[in-house]
Length: 114
Length: 112
Image (tube, rainbow over all chains, first blue to last red; front, side, top):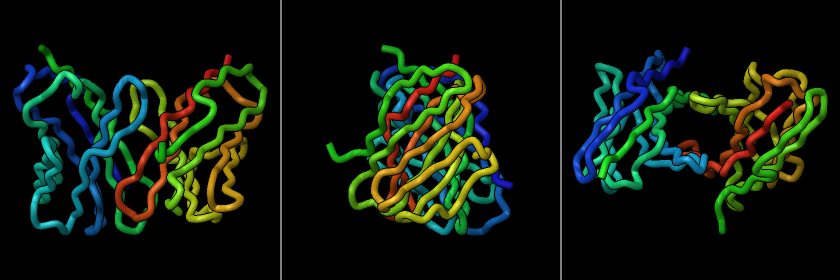
């Protein structure tokens, strides 16, 4: 069964600094996709970044990058140059290759300090 | 606005009543998903449609829950005989590929 673990319930970062949000996963399927979503207090889930299990390079999208370590089954999100607007809940999620359901972790609440 | 929309945004109902939520996906997206999110947790998958066909249902979707997507466009999620444990945020998402899903703002249900 799939499992997503986010071990940091809350994280603080100073504005303009970088922060890493941890995510580990467990699957026996060799084909899977990993996702990060941001959920501000308004409630809407905002897609940030995607990494496929066969991708050779780590995914990057603007200030977001995914540190994908396949052997360790980790997919940490790195946010560079944090902004106050980055304060939100962040969810790591995974979908196995043959499935349609996406499984989410419990989330990490990021607070950016001015 | 071409994003996913959900109505209503908030619903308060008494235990035992039926409620129905609507989701309008991004127009060119043929895949539609429903999730439920309780406080302090990540979303949990409920069901998946490809066009009008409901192809997957989670065990979380008890027989009191039913979802439809009659014309392959908007979808409805109905909960019959609501219970206090049904209180949650119900999220709809759509996609055109098997990759990222785009979420709506959700419907927050409170059962009193």
